[in-house]
Length: 126
Image (cartoon, rainbow, N blue to C red; front, side, top):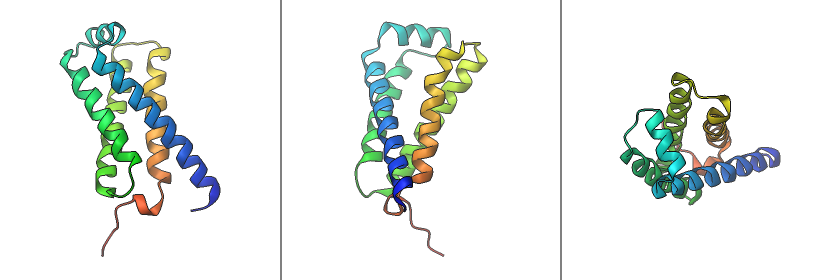
């Protein structure tokens, strides 16, 4: 992997991890703004706990060395959670300022996954 790709990978991965960790913690704390947003989107409040735990565990999986299959699952979970958030906001008519954070985390997920080093990928056996 060349130096530029490695730098972009780590920048995207660190920003993704910080974003997922911070939103995961906020969701676990059930901050008033997030509870209100869940009501607006017609989702149950217990979903905040589930998403918060999954995000924090996903960050651990993405950052620790080895365990490439676990990393694939974490990236998939991030992708599903963030694409679902983007779609939910679009479907409910949210303004772009509420859609942008989820969209940014979705893009960071794809960039981090695509540029991950070979030792963080699942080996394909033919």
